[in-house]
Image (cartoon, rainbow over all chains, first blue to last red; front, side, top):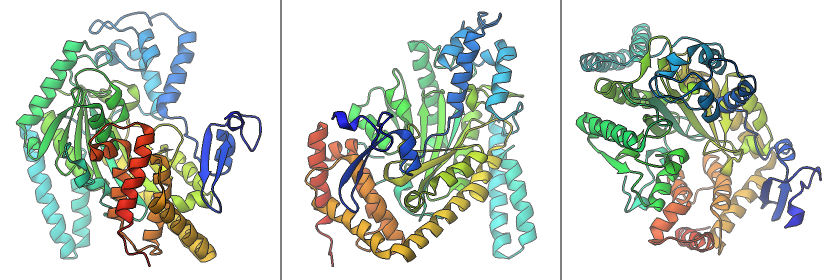
Length: 165
Length: 354
């Protein structure tokens, strides 16, 4: 087992990737992540937004500033607790911690600060919207079948804007 | 979804059909939603968790969504059944491992799975085989609208849907596409693809989204940001830009493999088939790795003994929970390796090999 612990290519790093080749012959290879990536065996995970956020949060813990111990009046969570867990305590935390949280959100979302997607709807709106959508889909189908492509394009745009409304 | 007899069918996402199915195995969209009148799960008490579960499952039952669906109580489910749901991509590993009141509402054709009390109170998921993001979005959007008219979803005019983790705030949408990229892995061009995806702020991961392993050459591409973009905008990045590009790369790599090394490609396929047909004990990982060249062989028309639907049955039913369910007992790793080899021999030995 011990010879499997060190990467067979660089003989330095710990082997964490274990591959069994079957062609041309059955052979086991034990590589470190870096060599495995170079060999094209694995694709190293690009840091996920979550990981980046976690790292950023840890960094922030070290440089803690006043206001981080103030608790959300609704759930009682403090910003410091959020920094440790990475998860918020209740919807009101977005208001209670906004000064500290908004820069984080902006960073995690490539500088975006505003939602431009769909919004919740009432029962009537939901029904109206979906009646209209299914009618538009029918019209679109007819337009494509009738080869009225200009009309189809405008119907498609209408469907898209309604879907994200 | 039939928990008692799961090895009757694979579920829609493994049908092997749909646009670009030679490279795109399946597509998935999920929306993260929370109730505004409850704490997020990180601060919710045991009782509050149960209340959230009841409130959401009650409203689902009251809508047209409930027709042809079943609610599975994940907390009360047998451990093998929970793993079965993960193998069928109906719940996440996080949902499997969580504690307390939680469940999933699954449609009969398994194209829809609403996870209750995962990281967020509700995660509306749609999944289908091939590149079918537009169809999935249509389904998911209807479910979301129907539930949003009955449940007070936490929503802020500026930040959009409020989620437990701020990385999901905004649309709460996660779009992910599972791709089979054996040729790009063999020609070592996979890193180029990963780079192209990263430039568009997309993540490339192994099949279950975590860790670095791409078992059986299956990769998952998904969006990372959810604020400042519309749902359809995010979907378009996949359907118009990144996925057709990766599919092209993979197809070109497959063709160049064929023209340069036809005999090598055939050798790889048939050695894999030989091992699967004759092994006496085999792990789940090795099975998936061996099915990969055969999957490619079917699409390149180098292998004709069975089709993708049959291959996907082997792919799914040889996974630990399915195997144990099929054998009607709980088994350790060693017993599973033997049972898996037996099952593969039994399915494959009947084929007319020329």
